[in-house]
Length: 388
Image 1 (cartoon, rainbow, N blue to C red):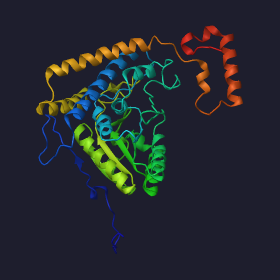
Image 2: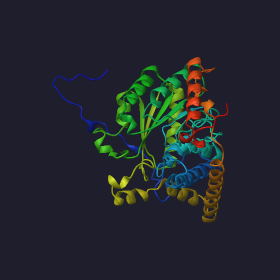
Image 3: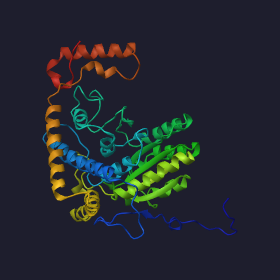
Image 4: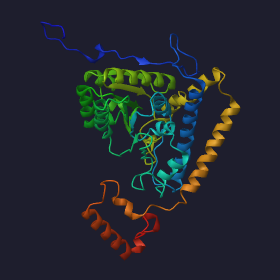
């Protein structure tokens, strides 16, 4: 119970001082008093492999979009540590609800280079059967819920899924990723309040990358970031340096332990910066300066983590060259193969929603096929095969 006062008085925002958890300096050395999380060499190198793979994948796929080979792409340049570091601290049975910049978490779970490419090219091997935009990944086998474009929808969904895990008595939690822009959606408030009241074992990880497309954080909210909202909802909250992979890893490990021990949610605000454009449809030169970008480029999370590995004697320049070369070759080969595979048949449009397609869906599909056969010049082969 709060204490009583007998004269009117306000509690202002600066009464709450939320610190930022940091472990690594940019040169790969530890801050005074910081401790490395329990991370063996094999896992440490696996995480670096994930970071580099995603950096190369994003670079290659942005180029593919500029060449007209895919219609859209959304890179995670500068934010890779937030998704890779957090995913590394989870267990395979934990469910992931992503937004659209968490390809690093999916890669860590075991999504192959061919699966990435098949999805981006919407070919017949795409797990989504060609019904999604590029980078809208999903994998039932890897407990990675399929991404949807509308902002924030995954937040209340994650709360509900975590509540189900709790009711089933599972040794598992749910992590939900979103940006600070999505935290302005109503679903954010509904989802966090639901998780707090029902005590759901969910980790809400907000990537505060400074911009909601072209809107800077200062124009989105006047409070102390997103972390202060978690405290307002009665949720255990931590702010972390999102460019520090070790800090993100340790924060997520602590959040998972807390969520399962207390059957309660946790909010992590990972402070980072989106070095690239919001998407291939965006031009950031219209709303921020090159000087600002250059200052944040000096805080590159991959370079910081590489320095730590090198300092420990676990990495070398020769290994670095080999790793980048291998990923570039493998991604390019997979891309060339994926774009040659045929697209899915039109019949897949009505599968997977119901156990059996309903009569009205079958009728609509029949009408669509008749329309496409009547106007074949308007529907090139890339729009879907008419096998039946």
